Image (cartoon, rainbow, N blue to C red; front, side, top):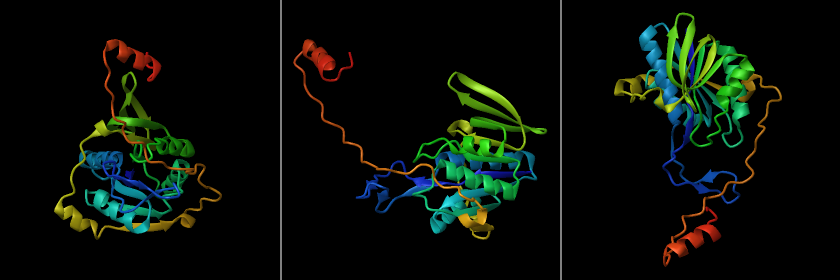
Length: 252
């Protein structure tokens, strides 16, 4: 059995970001972390290996060559993933659709039984790649997974929905997107960090994947820094408060 997992780096949600002067991207010394949902996908793959054995795991990262390679090694291979694949691409211009098409081409090369990816990236928050990938592959999918189990020839997934929990049984191959409640990602041990340096990491260019005319369908028009929080004001009495809520805030 083979499992392909996502290993995407994202800008640190807790860092203060500066928008470039042209409003197209962020600039300065940007701090990056492994996407939280990808960490859950990686941990899920490792737990399935521990439970069933004889499963090869591969981490896929797409983006800047050097930095993405570092995150694949430190965030996936050091935790226990067997090997990595890096697809060099411009992170400023790739959109969810192009990422899904890249995944589809890698899936065609690797022929995994399960594709386990984070349900979304915490920077773009699009939540589209898993669903698009399943459509392009024609595979069954289970999104927002909070529990994953392999039972015989099927994968049983408990997923979080608006009304509570839903349990699905899917035949393999299939696509699963991981939610935060799926597990608690492990830390990479020192031995794992050392071993990760020697684990295989294949580097590919977009031209290697025969994407044809596939191009991004979404472009960034402009990015803006959110307005700072405005200071509050004092009211004389309840009538004054009600008047402001009605006339200025228009909430009642």
